[in-house]
Length: 134
Length: 178
Image 1 (cartoon, rainbow over the protein chains, first blue to last red):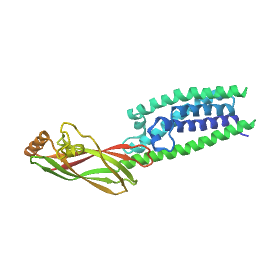
Image 2: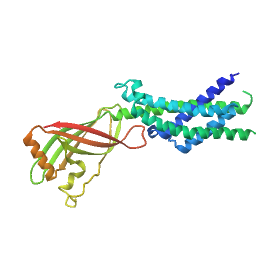
Image 3: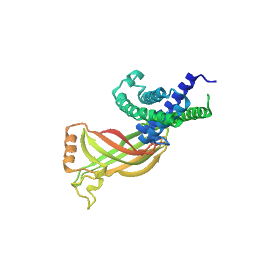
Image 4: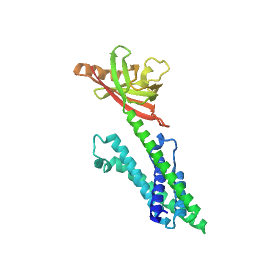
């Protein structure tokens, strides 16, 4: 039987990966090269869905519903740092790239949009699941 | 896990997470590959001749070469010609001097459609006769008298990159010393 903490963490990371994919396909130009394009509405829908699933999996879901979007933004930033490094790695070090203005001016505003959209929606999902369970 | 609904929710979320990670990796890889492929498009001026008579014009031959490992779908393009940093003419004003219906005061900024897929290592020659306005022709004459002439073509290619669902603009430059 899986330890509850392990289950909580793996579920949170899985939700973060889902949100990271939807976020990337919504706010970045990578969506133009993908089979599926997201959108702010989809970002909200998936955040609510992940919140519901997290609430069904364990009782302490409010924490996970906040942690998953934060992790998703970190994954999103990691993806873009890798993209920048792929394009400019021969000219700049990795550290120089992630503190550069082009990188920060892209990732910070988009990360902010992701957080203000997905955290409330994730919490809404938790509330919906909690109400339905009662 | 206590209840089936918890187990199903957990399995569903884990499966969604794994699928998302795989799709994210694939799409990011495709994006990087496509953008790097666009960098493989190169432009060169292979020939340039100026005709200085009552109807001044430039005969320009450009070569666009795909040096990327991907096929690049070029939809249309336009370019401008500069001499020592001064704009002399552009592909969208080509027929102002010969088309009787063309209005000289209206800059024609239409791109030229080519709809050409360039395979890796494939090149495409583009040949143009450009009309040169009298004021611009005077710049050419002055440059001829004063010294070296550095020509530059600045082109904008509209392409459909591999894996992309949207057209992209690629700006290329080429130099030519006369």
